[in-house]
Length: 115
Length: 114
Image 1 (cartoon, rainbow over the protein chains, first blue to last red):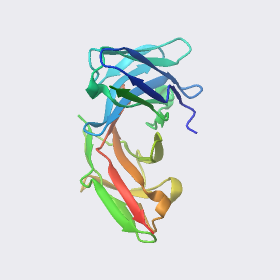
Image 2 (tube, rainbow over the protein chains, first blue to last red):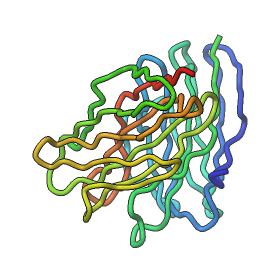
Image 3 (cartoon, rainbow over the protein chains, first blue to last red):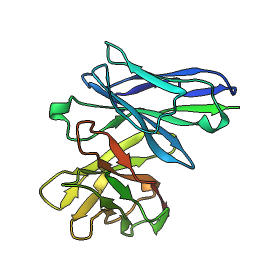
C-alpha cells in the first residue's frame, strides 16, 4: 500500500460529460502529480501541484483542469469528454522539495471509460 | 529535456534465468534515474533509484540496476527470475529544475515462463 488513495477506481461515462477524479496523497507529502496511462500514449505527465500551487504542466488538454486543496488532496477535472480520453489516470505524491530525492508514490489509478 | 528510452517492448525469460530490462537515457547534467514496476490492475511501485555513488544499485524484490555513464544506460537486472516478476517495467528520469516530475519510458512487458 503506497498510502496514496484515488477515487473512484472505475468510472464509465458518455462523450460530452464531465468527471472529477480525486486523490489523497500520502500523509505529509506536499507534491501531487497526475499522469495519464493509455495504450497508445504510454504514461504521460499531466500536471503537478506543490502545497496548493501549480508547479509544472505537461501534456494536459485545455478541457482538463486540476487543483490542490488546503488539506493537500487534489482533484482532476475532465470535461467535454471524448472517446480518446478513456485511460487510466494515476495520482502520485512525493515529499516536500527540500527532502525530495525523486521517488514518487502512486495510487492504484482511476480507470475512465468514455462510451 | 530529460528522456529515457526502453528499446524492448517485451522480454521473455524462463524462470530461474537471468533477467535484464534495458534503458538508455538522455539528460543534461547528472541523471536521477528510477525503475518502477506495474503489476496488472495496480499502480506503479518504486523498485530502485540512482542519484549518485555506486554504479550498481540494489532495490526491492532482488532487483538491481547498473548505471553506465559511458553508454548512457541504466539496465535493470535480476540474477534469477521468478514467474511473479511478470509485469510491466518502467524506466524514468527526473527532470532538472524545480518541478521534480518524472518522465517515463514506454515500458517493457516482462513475461517469465515456468
